[in-house]
Image (cartoon, rainbow, N blue to C red; front, side, top):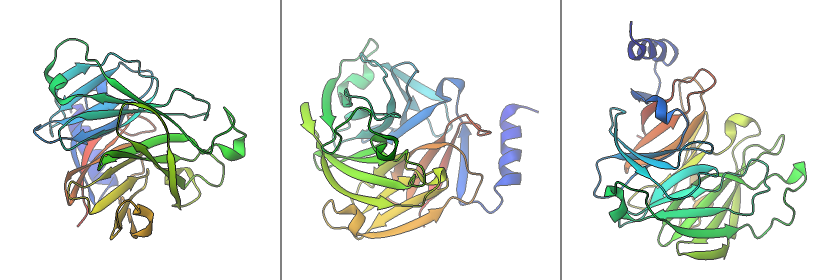
Length: 281
C-alpha cells in the first residue's frame, strides 16, 4: 500500500465529518512549508519553506506537484509567510523571530517578471522594526515580537505577531508597514486574543481579493474577520471556525477564491505535510 493511500486512510479515520478537505501530500522538498499564496495571472500555488531551508519559491499545482523552482538571491534567515500584490509581485516575510532578538527583520519583494527566470532572482528589501521593542531580546514576559503572518493590502503590509509568552499564547499584535523599499518603523494598530494555549497562536494570515474577509490561522482554528472598515480589522466581526480534524502544525493559509482557502501543515508531530482546502461557507 503506497504512502498516499495510507495518508488518505488515516485522514478518513481521524477526520470524519471534518470541514477541511485533503488535496495532496506535498513532496519532501516542501516538508516545512511556512508560506502559501495564490497570485493574479498564475495557476500555481506559490510556497516557501521556513528558516534553515534553501532560499527558494516553489510553484505548486493543486495536486501537490512542484512545477517551478525560483532561486532567490537572499538568505533564508527565517522565512515565515508569503503574500502578493495586485500586479502579481510576491513578497517573502523574513521576520521569524523566535527569541525576539532579531534586528534584521525584512520583507523581500520578488518582481512578477522574475518568476520566469532560471538563475538567481534579485530582490528589493523592505526593512522594519517594532516601535514598542526596546530590548533584544526582551524579558520572557515580553516575548511578543515573533511573527509568522502577514498580507499585502492597498500599498501596505499587515503583520500579525505570534506570542511566546506563557499563558498568553493567543495574543496577536497587528502592525502596519508601507509596501515600499526602505527602512520603516512599523505602526501598531491593535491587539486581539484568541485563547491561552499554544494551539491558539497565529501562524499565517491572508485577505480575500475583494477585501471583505480577513483570516488568521492557528493550529486548531481559522479566525474569520468581516464587516471591518478600512484596516480596522479587529473592529469587525470575528468568528472562530474550528478545524474539525486532527490538530497539526498548520503553518500557512491563503485564499483560493473569496470563499475558499488553501491550508498547509508541516511534516512534524504526526502530521504528513499536506495541502488542504477549507470552505468558509
